[in-house]
Image 1: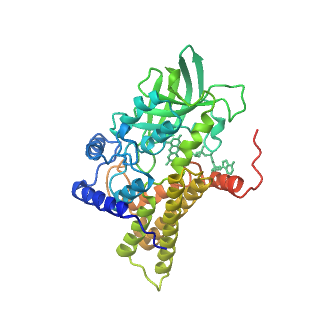
Image 2: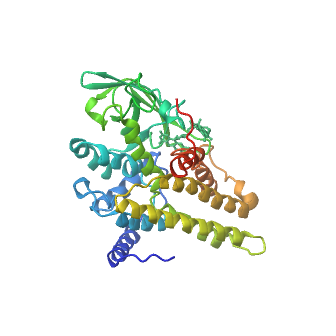
Image 3: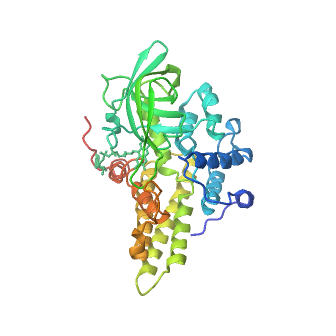
Length: 386
Ligand SMILES: Cc1cc2nc3c(=O)[nH]c(=O)nc-3n(C[C@H](O)[C@H](O)[C@H](O)COP(=O)(O)OP(=O)(O)OC[C@H]3O[C@@H](n4cnc5c(N)ncnc54)[C@H](O)[C@@H]3O)c2cc1C
């Protein structure tokens, strides 16, 4: 199937491509969690912002170009095609900000959204806790109302971009008597609030962008609750669906990666690698078409149902399959680590492999996506809920 884009979208693609190609960074950036790396990312993103390309799909009043879902998709495809640096504020751009757009008051939107596009605030997501990952509704961080303040106590973990973030969108329990999916609120907090401690977490493969965040009598304005008090579970579904569904050019990245591996390592009909890479490419193409379907659904304002969970499930399977084939073709070379300090990041092949594997966990594990699909799309019996 070959989808035809409108003349307007074709022209927009040419415009974006020309701008990105002539303005793209000329070297690979250091990781964002290093001082130099963060400065490089911020300088690049400031240029995107000045050109209106921070998030073209956001409304003009918040710093976007006010374009529709299809224009945003075209922009994301072009960004991914050139393998440009991952955005440091992706938590705000992809889920936190759009959730505030959907459920926040005009005052909240005006106060917080422009800062995401110009990076004056970097957002992170505070959902998971040491004993609440898949069972997210079992979270224990509390929010106690005192006058016009919400006083937070608890611990968040696996906070991506936590080491550079200035704001967190978090889920906290505001009614301990209510059933566990109720009594939760969605709140925005400044990470420099007294009583907030951010501790960096370095992973075995060298990545040091995660943090765990400790909250001890941290008082935030009650006015920072997004949506009605105690209805945070419903608000969080908007954020989670956005996180699972819209991969920001992920399909382009998949297709580009398969082609690049075939070129670099060879696709051989005798060893079966041609057939396997062809199969991965077919899955990547199917993922692209499903992304277009989701874009169409969102453009029409229709309910996306379980499609974000289907995309999330397939994303991790396809990316892992591609990276496993790369390791297969590399043989022993896949395990080699060049000499360097122990804290040096892993070589790209290994980093990408482990990042693909992490796709089976973040934004809800593979098993959780299967539960959602079976219950909401296939009508199978629900898991028992206390
Ligand atoms: C790269 C990465 C980035 C992340 N970034 C963030 C972030 O920015 N903010 C944030 O809040 N969190 C983040 N997380 C945390 C992530 O959301 C959790 O790790 C995830 O939800 C799983 O929770 P858990 O680790 O506690 O595993 P558990 O929930 O303990 O699960 C362990 C295993 O049991 C299975 N399991 C659990 N319950 C069920 C069930 N009901 N049915 C079937 N199987 C089940 C799971 O599938 C899994 O295989 C990130 C994680 C990763 C890997």
